[in-house]
Length: 326
Image (cartoon, rainbow, N blue to C red; front, side):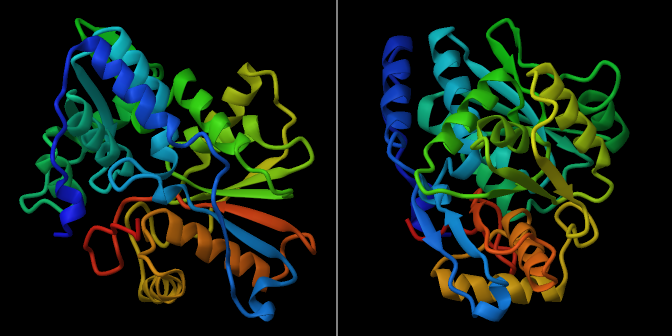
């Protein structure tokens, strides 16, 4: 395992010190987002300029959109004396991995409610989350759907005797606030924002924070994710922005969440060589594959500047944890 994933745990300090350390930690991202041009043959770009938003390089333990979804949650948790943070995710959840890293760095107990039976041999994501102190509560897939999608699902962050319960993917007003800040750091003009979609929280925040003359496209990493489309639409209606320009692409899930093919692996390996660091195939790889396919088929309006978000974490095609080049 790369030693960067075994950083020394800092002194935890008292509640006030924890809040100060969190504020200082997240202030490191106040500058404009770093954009990296995707250099592919012109025939593959279809006349578009593709810029990769490299927030996956913000930090090796809390990266990409997870940085922004957790920012205000963690600061508020420290201010309110929260000692435990519990949330939901699948076996390859970037969200749970980042939450475990935050717990390790800032002294929160973390609990991950896992969809499906806990595997006998932990995959690299769960193994690292466990090493950072996360405890797991596996539940059946039926029970998981009840907790995350059913009539009585946990859809807003809730407090229970010092324990903060976060919805799947960290959804909630504080997460949306962070994602809007994330998008607001783009200083270059653009016409299209792209993001992988797992729960819809990042997509919603990006739509709310996008430039008024742009549109947003989400690439679903899940099969049959039309319910997420409805969820995003409902959130936008609540925010009184129901007519925002956005859409979801559902054709690039490669069989479903955390499923992949040799074709996707080859694509991610090719991009990894070009970019100098591993591409997460669970989310980011599927988004970039889909974007490339749309450009090849000339399915996007011509001459667009596209900003695609690198959301960080997760796994290399071979199954090991993708650390990236920090």
